[in-house]
Every structure is written in structure tokens, then in C-alpha cells.
Length: 336
Image (tube, rainbow, N blue to C red):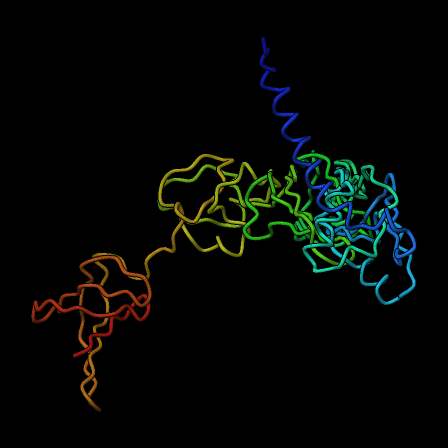
């Protein structure tokens, strides 16, 4: 009675049979039975380390022969792709013979002296996370990332270690400089091997940045004008500062607050304004021009207006309402 083999054993038997058929198909043509006709020999090496993306026959075997040009062609034959950096793969004699046949190379005068497997290891260099952090720190010293502001680096976070191919390794660091308004700044480190880009590592720079802002030193009522005695500059953590905070007293003097504010308030662009040049009820001069003719009349403002703003005015004599543009605190220009 015939007992069936388990599935795994059957699979292994099929694979072994397939390779045996390939070997039987090629090896008789190699020339072992007639050593006198052999002109070129290929001796497979037990293990090698490669540095390039592709594996050539000269990497994994010693090729000898009478014709140096033919030997050079064989050594340059691409056998396959190299494994990833730090990884390995196995290449056997049958696979090599298949590659030779695919390239149209006659096998009757080639002797394969070693039929075992060759372990091919890809050369590599480990770039650990500590190195990447040091590279980022060095880059910080070479540029004014914080634009003169006081800063304190709290942490540098990177994804982890990186295995890269062997070679001349260099780095290019780029910080996200656009609108730094947070204490977490994205940073990228491009890893170059022999001058060619290999991989980009992303990280985060965790930092406290201190920015001078204008705050109130006195409590002000609504529409009260701001004087130099009412404000002071205070250094605050950038992450705690509103987006529209006012950074310089030059941008605040002469303006007024739009609502009552307590001492210590960070001044923002949305809570200050320039006082209007003309207020509702002010008596002003209405100026009108038509060609070379210029006419003025006494008028009264019907609304507040800043310089250049269009407001309604009324001619005191005629009671006629007109629209004009504020020229200064006493004049509104009417255009016909």
C-alpha cells in the first residue's frame, strides 16, 4: 500500500526535482566530461560583500580564461539585484548558468568549479538616532533659525536608526522656517551616499522661543488713548502668544483701545485702533472742486471717519447731505 507524503514534503520534493532538471539540462554542456576543451573557468566564492545596487559575476566568482576580453565580459555580467543594506541573499550555480544562457553565452567551453551557494551580503553603515540628533544640533549653530530671539532647545525627536549603503555619507538639514509660531518645528535630514540622495529622515525640534510683545502696564477704559506710560515690552513663550500680538511699541503709540482692558493684557491688532480724525457732530469745512473752481462751506460730520475714509456730511446752510473723504481733522473733500 502506498502512503501519501505530507504536503510540505511533496512541495520540497517538487522544488528539488525542478532544480535537478535544470542542472541536468545545463551541466552536461559545461564540459566536465571533456576537460581538454574547457577554455574558461568560473569558481563561485562561498561568501562576498557587495556595495552596489546590482550584483555582477565578478563580485561572486573568480573568472579565469584564455581570452581576457571574454573574461572581462563575464565578470561584468549582471547576475541580479543586490539585497537591501545589511541584508543578504543566496545565489547558486544553476542560477548563474541560467543568467549566462539568457545573455546568449555559449556554455560548452565554460567550467563551473564550485556548485555550492554563494551568500551575498550588502555592505551597510548604521546611522543611529543619536547621530541624527547631533547633526541637527550642529546645523542649529550654523544658521539663525530663531531670528535673534532667545530660545531653549528642550528635545529633538527623530523616527529612529537608519541603515544606509556603505560609502561616503553626508547630510543636508532643512528646518521649517516659514511662519514659526509654535514650539514644535519640523526638520528633515537628507542622507546622501557618495553624493546621491538615499533617504530623508523626518524629525521634530521641540524648543521654547521667547518673543518680546507689548503688554499693558495700566488698566485702560474703552477708547482711551495709549501712551508710552501705559505699555511695556515683556518676553513671552512664542507658543503662548496670540497670532496677532503687537510686537513693537512703534505699532501702538497714538492708537486707542476698542474696549476696557486690564493691566497685563497682551495687545493685539483687533483690540486697538487709530482714533478717527473726524467725529460725529464735529463742525468741519466741506471742500468741493469742479475744474478750476473751488468752493468751501461749513458743514457737520454725520459719522466718524479716519483719514481717507468716506463719510456723510451735511451743509449747515443748505441742510443738504453729501458724501466726502476725510482729508484731516477739519476738512472733508467732496468730489462731483
